[in-house]
Length: 324
Image (cartoon, rainbow, N blue to C red; front, side, top):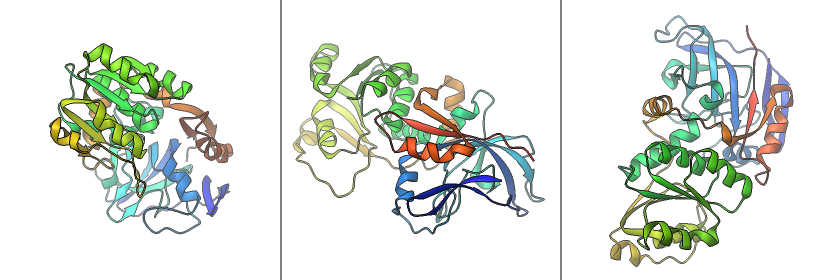
């Protein structure tokens, strides 16, 4: 079988590998779509939050089809369309253990969720980033049509937040300086898209100077994280989803008290995958505008290169079509 393999640091390759055997409690999955994210690039560059070893197969944003089941598997059959969670106990699928960027890979039934009929393989491979956005929205709490919600940053997670917030009914404002990401935000339903310099005037216009009821910070830029406190309305809710470790920026922390702000932080998407899948299916969420480049497995290294070019790409996908 063909697989994208990180042979060693900074060395991705398409390798020919044997189709793996499955244990009694495992299934064999044929990949159909696999996304490349920033964490995959960090892994290639030799840095990740837990230990790992080369060579390994990346891929934690994926969708696929069950093609073989172990004797002890009870809830899945051949032909089921599935997606899978990426944090499994102490292991991180696609990081500390090899992932889904291969024509075939093994997974335990307990990791997997059936893909609703209404969600295609492309969107299936976007369930993981959308689950992160969905979790952040649920943490903020009670987002609805009474809210003006500002998304700071239109990377993959910020755009997923945009789609989710709009589906919940909020008036959704996306702040993003890059033109092609602004266009993606519009396709995902944003009511207003604006560059950073235009935000204050826009909020004054649509809220009468009150500020945003909800702010989701999705850049991980410390200065923008500080700005989130300033644009929030009295008794506003501010959710931090962008990640930064170690950098600093001045922040008016007194605003938390004087505005009676509710502050939440979120990381990952623990426990919400079933809810995420139902939400995507029931609301007709289509995240395909996030996918700006698609590559066949023979050119999977091209997907890695595209993921390292954020000026032109949001999300690169690798497509697979192998059958047993």
